[in-house]
Image (cartoon, rainbow, N blue to C red; front, side):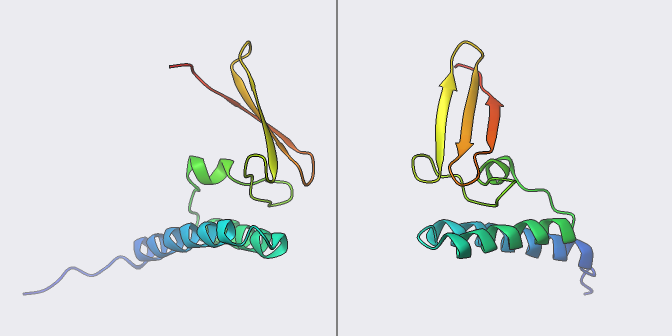
Length: 106
C-alpha cells in the first residue's frame, strides 16, 4: 500500500509555526534578560516573514513592533481602558509606542 507524498511546503509552514510558538514561550521565560527576550521575538518575526506565516492575534498584540519588547502589563507596558471610546490603550514602557485596540463590552 502506497502512502501519499508529503507536501514539503506545508510541512515547512507547520514547522515554522511550531518554532514561532516556541520562541514566544522562550521570550516570556527570559523577561529578566530583556536583550535575549527581544532577540527571541525578532527571530520569531523573521521566521514568520521567511516562510510567509501569519502570527496569531495574540502573538501580534504581545510585542512592540517598534522595539520588539514583549508587552507584559505593569512590567513592560501600561494598559488603560477608555470606556467612552471603547478602546484599550497599551503603551510600551521601553520606547513609548502606543497601540489602540477596540473592544466590545459583553
